[in-house]
Length: 341
Image (tube, rainbow, N blue to C red):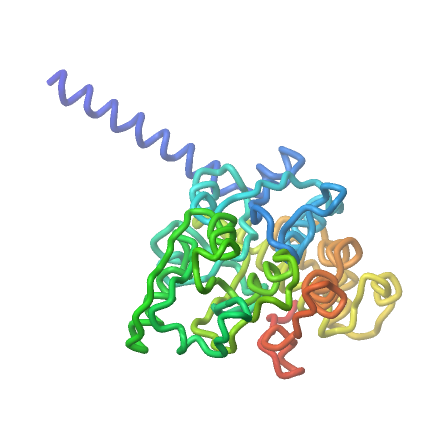
């Protein structure tokens, strides 16, 4: 009898602890507000997406998602603790509560969205995996890499895509695997590998760090779909909505012509879609636990999606990546956000 009583008490205590843990994880917005700071997981350093500048300030397309969420919650885009995370560390940090949001070149896949306790809240960048080689290798296609050694980072979808591509094309290759991106890149740069593979966005970013960028070429093949976007824990729909609609607000703002420079003037617009976006009409902020000017704050303090893209990775940046698939739907791209109404 004592055994069963003790076991029952242990079960109750365990269940109670689980309830407390779940409660803590299902009130992320309240936790963030109470803390007075957003804890955002970012890359360990990827130019254009997430890296500190010369003054030590974090910047990039992924970083702007963090800043936009901070603007929506605090009316201040800088109430953030940035937590640099490797590919191996990122999901554990989110699942454990070390961070509130992961905004770090992370691919949305079925297994991650269902079995890993994660919720993807949108696609901030449509990407695909490619290859970079030294120009002296005299290769112009990935299909010419038979027998090549290829540097790749483990713990990523990149490693699986690499195996799938070469197997489906019946090409032999030698993977050279590293835990950290910096290690894989250093090995490629030192000549230990014939090629380096990762998302094309990363290849263009990394290429700028390799001395003379023209000594390296990105091969034309795109071997995978890599929809990248912000991630939160499962089980907290209100927080997921905050992050999801933060991204959607930035995309809708670009479509509606609302910019960081004209957002104050646009509050006088007669366009109902603009008025709802900026909180002049309706009570859409309350639905996600925010003030009615949540989207106005995002645009005023961070800008719309197009502005963020341009200054971080697009024509206004050293990377100079064309909008391509990341153009708005009306311009032939894939970026499309549900309306605020």
